[in-house]
Length: 203
Ligand SMILES: [Zn+2]
Image (tube, rainbow, N blue to C red; front, side, top):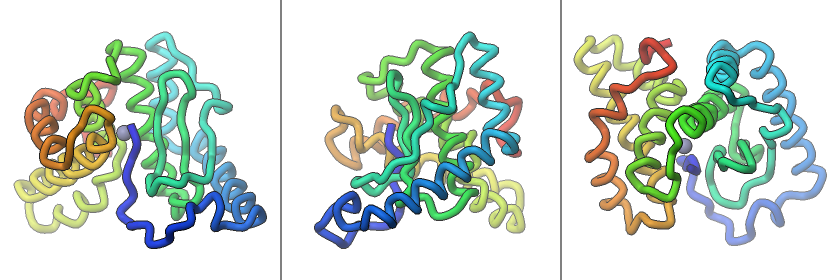
């Protein structure tokens, strides 16, 4: 359930050791500010909070934690620990908005659908939904819109598949990228078409 970042780490020293304590504190403080802002004002974050509540869950802001991550990823979801936001990889508040929305889709799935996170297909399904519904593929969508409707939806699907596979490859049961792509393809159609709790994909 970890979201990969596009940047490859060049340093051998992990960020938690390479960054000074002051820098780490600064990054986490900024991340906390963005987080608080999104909880108050982001339509997609507020919508997901609400939907989780309506499904019998509760997202405590204390369970959304800004941290320094050593793995190059934007965030993660754990059914017991909650949401992790990687302060050192989240570049601005809109990236945080999409990352938080993404992790909240996992939270929602965990409550609504009794997900078995150790099952690769379950995991892939939630990753497809999270990538599609969070808006993280929306920039590409917006860009492709100018090229016509067909290409817009194709671009969105390609982006969702790619990002879902990048998350699935981090699963302990996933062998490699080919295996991840295979699993994503297998469940793509039904999971992509399941847009609950949204009525449609595009915000
Ligand atoms: Zn995810």
